[in-house]
Image 1 (spheres, helix red, strand yellow):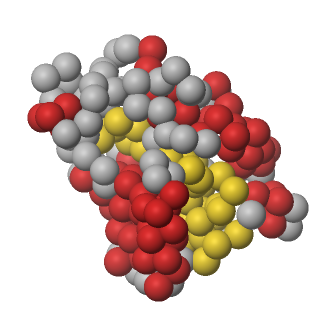
Image 2 (cartoon, helix red, strand yellow; image 1 turned 180 degrees about the vertical axis):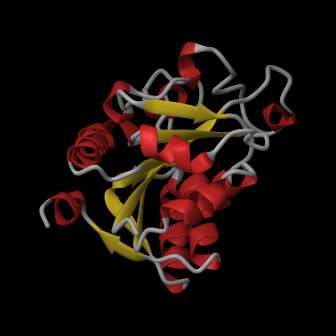
Image 3 (tube, helix red, strand yellow; image 1 turned 90 degrees about the horizontal axis):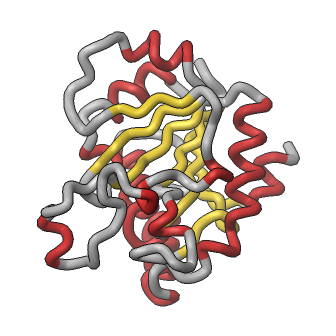
Length: 199
């Protein structure tokens, strides 16, 4: 059983960079903490499950949000601070190979999705079950959308969830506060980066 798994939510150029297509306010200010968390996980052999938007050019979501994280564009790429040297990308479709073998040979698995919730990728639940961690440490963007969705889905599945309070950023201040309150009400614990990496 893994003691921890890091759950990196949507740390992609279009969300994090100030000039990104759907830049999250304040996201640039958490880049250092995102890097610290990634480096800590890699140094301590903690698996990283990362979600990543991967939209087709004609995605229906673009009727609600501006086009962002379009497949195979620079904005869809993860920022350098959260990239691992042994990473594998799993499309939003049933995986045709051995998930445990994938876990064993990589240190980061990127799960592509087209909606807010990483659990919309059919491989997410099986991956987390195979890793079987005691604690799921969640961070990334945006607090009031995909971070909230991931945390609530993890909690609903019965997992212990810790959200890194200084490694998340919200689209709106009010939405961020409401999301944090909701995650807390459902059982999420909140800790700062230094509490995670300085244990």
